[in-house]
Length: 169
Image (cartoon, one colour):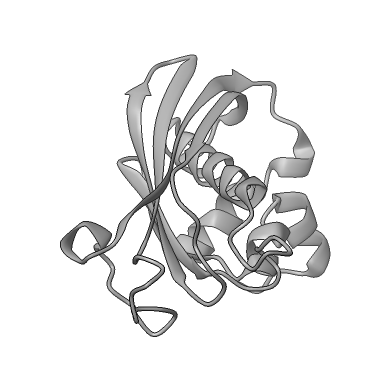
C-alpha cells in the first residue's frame, strides 16, 4: 500500500520514516523494529538523542495498544524512560515493546531499546533480530501508559491500514 505524504503526516509515522525506523512486526503480543543511529536521530555529540528514544517508545507502544484494543483510539497518558548508555552514530538499535497490562480502558507497555556496546565492531551491518541472544545490551527502558477507547476522530480512521501495511498484518 503506497502512502501519500499527507497520509504519513496524519498517521504520525513521518518522524519514524525520517530517522529510518523499520517496523519488523506488530501484533497484540508485541511490536518490534530497528533503526541505525544517523544524523537525523543523534545529538550534536554524535550519540542517539534521548528525545528520539522517548518518541520511539511512545510510538511503538501506541501501535501495540491500538492493535491489542482491536483498533480503538488510544493516547499516551504517562511516559517514563531511563537512558542507560549512549549509542554512537552508525550503530543499529533494536526496539521491543511488550504489553504489561491490556485492560479495557488502560494499557501499560514496556519498551526496551537494545544496541551492541559502543566499543563493539557490530554496527549497521549487524542485523540480528534477537538482541538478547547477542552481545547487545539494553540502552534505554521505558514504560508507557495509554488510555483506550477515546472518541475516534475521522482523521485517524485509516491508521489501521497504514500500520497493517507496514507490519504486513
